[in-house]
Length: 162
Image 1 (cartoon, rainbow, N blue to C red):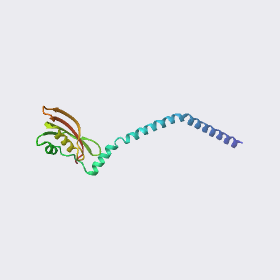
Image 2: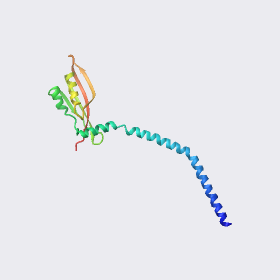
Image 3: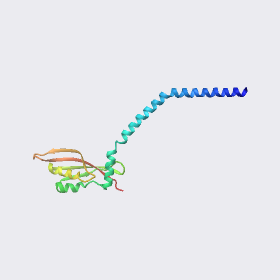
Image 4: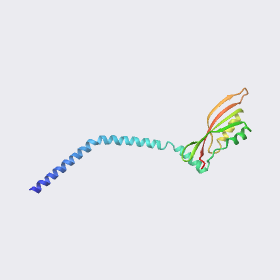
């Protein structure tokens, strides 16, 4: 009889624990649904951000595969396309980009040049990878049609030198 009472008490205690756990689960489920919804929203944001730099990564990988690590020499391009001493080129210090690459800027000042020659110079600068990209341009026209002074800012990616 005593053993039977112990088993009934143990079964009743176990049933009470089961009811308490079930009640806790039912009461906690809306909060857990909120947490899961927030986590799903966070995951969608992470997925959206993960592809954000895919184009830039693909460009760096392509440049690495082509071993195109240094942009064209602007002094040489200017001399070839605009004539000797036609351009004053100032390379600015490079800033770190990603994966061993750095961003290089160049300031190009041109006095009394033909706009057509400048267009050819810019096309030549954008011809070989990594290309120089025109970031800013300031034009001061002269009295002669199709000529003037220009201030250009060009930028390119280059591989860091060891």
